[in-house]
Length: 422
Image (cartoon, rainbow, N blue to C red; front, side, top):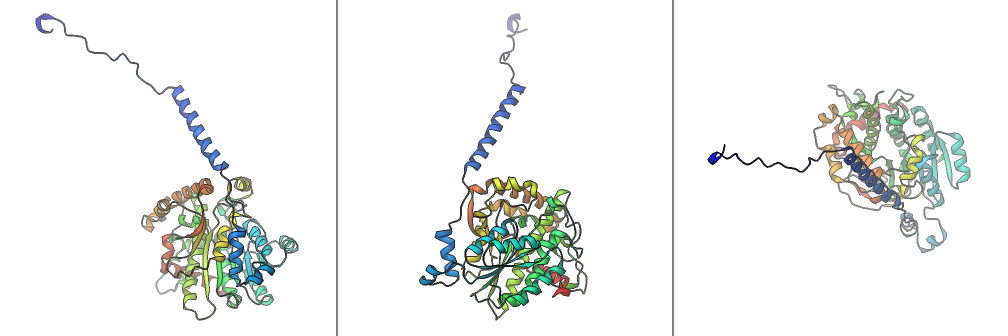
């Protein structure tokens, strides 16, 4: 009772109804969310495909590369006199690249595994010679390289382009028992490059170039899978093989294991490039340089025929902007001798996301799929966004590429692995 026996006033009651998350509210969120996603993709697909400036950029730089004067520019194709060998030349971006090189006057040595496709390629494109090589078999690689040594006087550029992706094509082994993606993408190209050194050293260009067609996907791999297992008193060339070379492919988890086999092979290519550059820097012979590139997502069938149509719709066109990083690597006359490796791509990329893949100690990435997860987020981001951020140029590769010890271990092991064919 209150003062004077009066009852206290009743407590204030909020007469406003409580808000609940009803099915109607959920439906509203779904509608707005769906509309936002549709609008986002509409903007992306409405954005025109970027194009390469052939007449104003590529062709003048090609004439400059070949040392053409004004009279030559009027009378000669821009790449007249260039001898360039390309692996994987009968399909995908390798086929587009070969056709473009041929149209620009280069003599292309097309390397592929299908005799019928090679024959058709030579018939349809002027200045194309063919070499039959199955990169899944080191015997075939050595035989093809020996054929080239007998038939050709020189090679001015070598483009190690051919590649497969185990995550969608299935895990298998090469003829010599190596993990197939590692063997095709890396080890066979290692052997081919070593075997062709006599031709590369005879180039008439001021500088011979080797171009490794790697991938920004290499950011999703670490060096742990690529380091030969160390044993006391054994050189790297005689050490047990790295995890990436063995059937099964990688440390990894479920689907990530298959994907990492691809990322491992792409990182191996860049490590190989830097190991070679260090050797070339000490050589007094023909100046030589190895550069790495990423064409980004391009409309090819490397991810399997089932995804080819999707990639042709959303990715860069393989006969136009998809070739931009190839030609940038070929034609760049940058004399910068900094320690930063030369890695060219068609797109800008979010630096923070890239560096996050190297933020933890290496052992953490060996035990947990952290780099795999971030790497695939990065790949998905590029697939969706690359039309909005086209930017051809030189980028810094993964930080682990600078590990000289890892470069040397992989090089020496690889040299030992292919010694019987050298």
